[in-house]
Length: 581
Picture 1 (cartoon, rainbow, N blue to C red):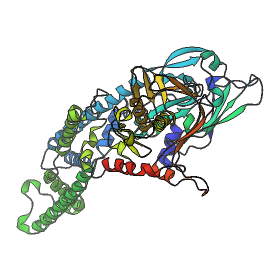
Picture 2 (cartoon, rainbow, N blue to C red):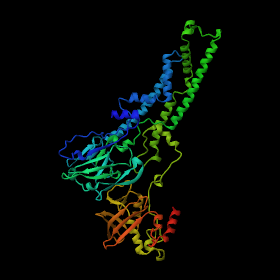
Picture 3 (cartoon, helix red, strand yellow):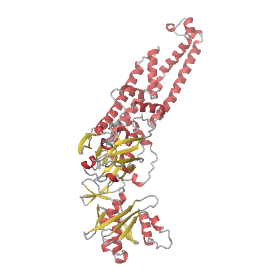
């Protein structure tokens, strides 16, 4: 730790190179090798700046870095050392008050950080040790521990995904606290460990993980897991960001996790207003120095006249005048500095500090910033940046979901060029001339129920990226678009019931359960600009359903001899949808 701090002081941020080897469950991969406990960072999270021992010197150092505080400290020292016309109390007492009030405010805010850190570090997690579930405090997790995380819980550290309660070995993760993305992301287990559902099975796992050293990039992770079985050559499987996280082995802990490496809260924050104040202080300081210089010069010009010598009680011998002439000039200059020091108000900083401190309470009390879903208001981590909110002029957003609630709702659709907007009446009650064929309608609805990567989970709570189904189930998807389409199909009577053993179940309007074998899924990517699924019915028919924007489908097949799909009749309704939106 000391070496790392020295490197940061001398050459900046430490360059992390090389790899680390993690023994899963702290079990040696070979009986012939002696197990040596590995030394890694503890899992204790520290977001505070001060401790009991360094609060006073560190806080004083940070406060006297401010130009105004340092200036008044110099004035106070001048009044103490040099014979000045004013008492040192006139500048020392206000400076002491300013420093004390600021220290109390910053100490209180740092105490809140200590309390939040303690709440996180003392939270309990489940660790699998010796085929048993053992409760541990979060700060006691070490690299190599196998941690079990339940649904809707936060990860205590960076984990390698070993197994999941989902049969397809996947889970959905939200990273809103890291990158601001509210959509859930899909993570996958390692193929060879996906069937480790029990503690006994996990306890029999002998494996080692080789991965890169901790680094702050959230979307980068490179490594591999070596699985040892029956004294055979180890099976190596690659690891990527999609394997990094329910149940997994700890690879990065504490201040080496990606969240901690991206945390830059310990540095002293200075707002734009404070920087402007410092700039004005420099200007006024130059004016003060100029006034003191002019007055000192005029004093000696005035004293050149014999009749305008110093008062009798301050007169010195000719020898003293010639010997200490330079020192006398300097002390006169400092005396004028003390006389004119009121040009910089000592109460300025304490007034600004109290305004920030009290303003943070008003931000927390603001009802317009209250989140009803989380039942909590705005949280001010540091009051030093309150006024920065008023400096925002432009907001750049990559999509509308960032600026809105990111809620999608199925309104209307087009089937074979026929527009459907009232889902409760048009399918059954519209005129036949204004509707597509019945089998085309049902095929479209089945496509909505099958062309997706949504999972159905049992539960009574709904979090980000989920939607209730029938009150007992919920949809979990990486995108709210897919949930909206499934909810739209459900309004027409087609309900997706979930996937089991590569079979997707759909309930039709007749309350019959249809089973489709999922043969393959082609995920959406920026090259194809579409998603495709290949399914097989119980009669043996195969369907390829595609979903994506209009343009890739309108281009048709690159081979001229093939018949292009029917899309022309649906172009006009799509354009109407765009105008109505």
